[in-house]
Image 1 (cartoon, helix red, strand yellow):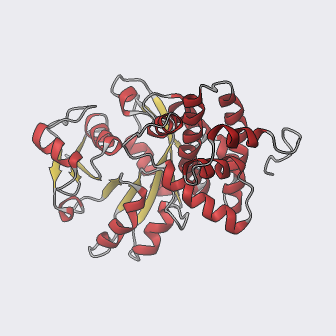
Image 2 (cartoon, one colour):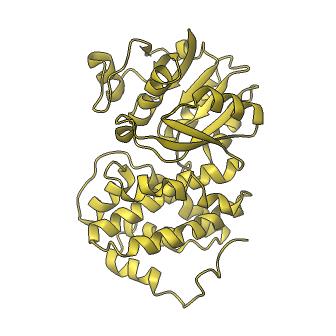
Image 3 (cartoon, helix red, strand yellow):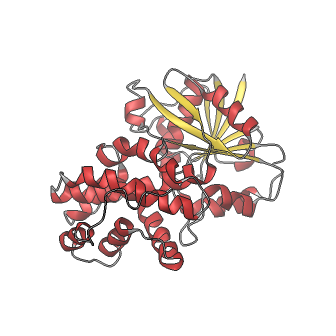
Length: 325
């Protein structure tokens, strides 16, 4: 039996383990810290609100156990990833492949997860990233979607895509490791903005948000050496339906409840990512009007309606004058 591992038993991680087990024919070893509510629920009931784990999915509270396999999917909160990497570095990981399935930037460094892992683990490992649209709830209804896998090693991309391809998820070959990670992270930030517009019932502005946000994100990608046009690919614009409109989107729901003065109470990865983006944009002088306005609203408690209006009351410009080259 083919073996694969998973670190992180949250909503998305558990689904990826289920997908590898049920669509790709793997025996999947799954790890999370034993005090994690997600892990406890799976251990005690063999299910979560979205799916039931199958006989070829095995739960472990021992990290060393899941590191016995050659391919390991990682899906944890981005702000905890450096700590995990420090823990992983104590083990012999030579030749192992890690597929990072998180969408966010480290706060306050604004570093992508690939760079965080390279900084902390000096061994000869292979790293790839997974980005693109898709919600567990839709996948469990057998609604197909697409995603992108990227790496700095073509052979690693090729192997993972061929290994994980199915009629449920079509994987594309990424060609911009930096842009795909930044685009995936910042679509969560744009999801916050979409949710705020929903909370205000300013639905008409969501189209304008969708048109302008990729230009802003492309500018950020370009600054860090990626291709600005990646903002129009699966990792960012391609994920807008799932993030800006779906009732399943944590980031959109956070924004909607925030605008209504309500507490969401769950992880919305866009919130710490927004803080990281604001720090870097200020330091590097990157023009990020949407993100700047969001920061004022969420972190500085600025008046929501007034602040959003200010975005659209900026100096008159040609629509495509700011398109990155």
